[in-house]
Length: 262
Image 1 (cartoon, rainbow, N blue to C red):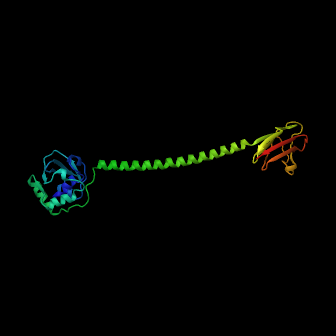
Image 2 (tube, one colour):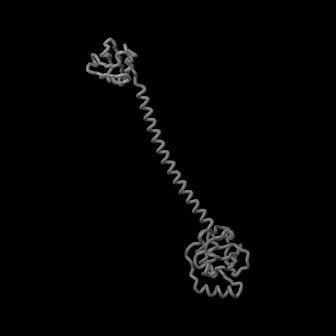
Image 3 (cartoon, helix red, strand yellow):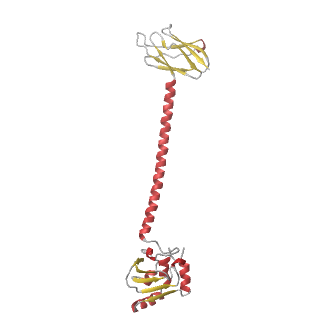
């Protein structure tokens, strides 16, 4: 029973112990029944500290001690989980609890009759627990923020990819050679392109005869644009090399010659 207080005091100790750092530690159930609202002076062979056991917490104090708890052990020998060490000390009578007045002696004698050794660990000070919760919350928020950033990055990447694809498509369209169908001639009336290129024909007539209609001759026999009104467009893709010609059906003197190279 006596060593419980000591466990409380020494649990987080590694090597040399600063008992004052245990201020605010929450004790397991049972300790407060044994020493509740009492001032306990803990004496190791090389360090001493007084605590008030109140509301399940260790509170460093300078008040006069109700109990003196002596441990025949140095702080430098404590490390890791001290529960086994204190249990052995208690078994070997290495811990002595001395009441400093009649009431404390009676109380300790009576309380120790019903005292059960707690198996649960001592907990960090409430402030430190709050800090740990804040840190965990910050980590979760950082993870959430990271996921959000990744989602936004993916969306932006998709949008950029779509825009690039549209721009490339527009560029491809813009790269097509444009031939204007004028009132009396094609502009240009002779062109050189490569296999796979497309020519866009645009009717720009503003004279008396606005309708245009292209007819392919020889190798392009059977190729027709149909009637094209002002600003109408029509295109044709050349898939073979050679020399090809289009004539305008309504003004037959208009001839367009196309040289298609490999």
